[in-house]
Amino acid sequence: MRILFATTPGIGHSFPTVPLAWALRLAGHEVLFASGGDGLAVRNAGLHVEDVCPGETVVSMVQKTFAERPDLAGQYAEVDHTSFESTQRFYAVLMNRQTAMIDRYVEVAEEWKPDAVVFSSLGIGGLLAAGKLGIPAFEHGYGFVQTGRFTRDLRDWNAELFERHGAELPEVLHTLDVAPPSVSGNAEGGWPLRYLPYNGGGIVPEWLHEKSGRPRIAVTLGTTAPGFGGLGPLDRVIELAGDTDAEFVLALGDIDTSSLPTLPDNARLAGWVPLGLLLENSAGLIHHGGSGTTLAALEAGVPQILMPDEGERAESAARVAGRGAGLNVRHDEISKTHLDALLGDEELKRSAAEVRAEIHGLPLPGEVAERLVATVRG
Image 1: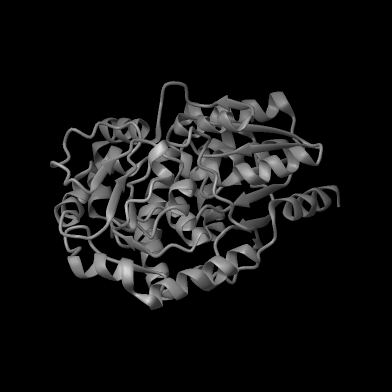
Image 2 (image 1 turned 120 degrees about the horizontal axis):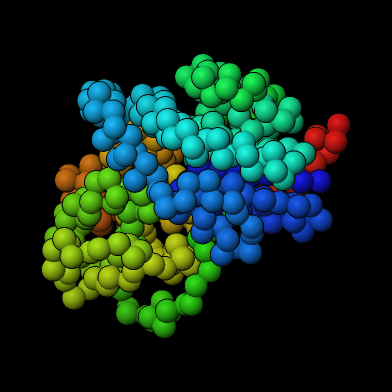
């Protein structure tokens, strides 16, 4: 069987699908990815990927759309940035305005002729491709809010694309839900799927296993957030780090870090480190609230401080804090009290451990892959 994974061009939507893709490969099925931008990094997992937007990233495409349509930029500035529905619906419309990219998803599907499509949440390209070919589609979640209820909206917002391709909205058979139920609260009938963090491979840095005698706090802003908001959210964390009895590791990838204030002696600028590996050696995590980062911390059983800026990240932070496994704090309001709680609050540690055990009890990708194939074959 051939399964096309159509993911939006970002790591946050592409990486969570890698374990299922490999489960299908190990069962003898053919897998191809259609993605772009940072999402092309799935090739490092030994998977084949077609680039649907050469030379572009999520950030560049959104910036281009705003430049071409300043009215949309104005509308975006006025939406409720604490609401998942407001920001994600707007984001979905922005990304789906990249007509050449959306058309390329369809072209890849027509050329490769898959039996089913697995698409990342809010991804119109995979929906359109499945509709054009008349094959079943499965939504692969990447966070805490199931977006299946937006499927009809995606069709209505992009009616001209469906009409130009002569496509109908495909049947979305099931949503594959990687979020632990006690955190997500999802009750929409999706298939549970154990979240296995995939962060890419890498050389283990020598310092990772060194013992400084102090607990380690990992700090990251993910791969997309700095492109929109810069590194300013870390200023307060860095200011407080020097007065905290801990080692801070700033895992910020290969972005320009020249805007950061001077780091104290107990803080290390680490560049890119696989997050799952870093969390295995950390007592806590401070981050932007991205879904993948949040899920990785929950899977590791590590307490976290989430500093969300808007929409989906705000939703993630609220749900984790509501479960008692983390703290939801504005980046400019974070205090020494929050850092002390991250390291010493036993209730945070207990809740984080409970969620980790819950995640480890969910069906593995191999089980879900078998179920998916059986469903497609009927």
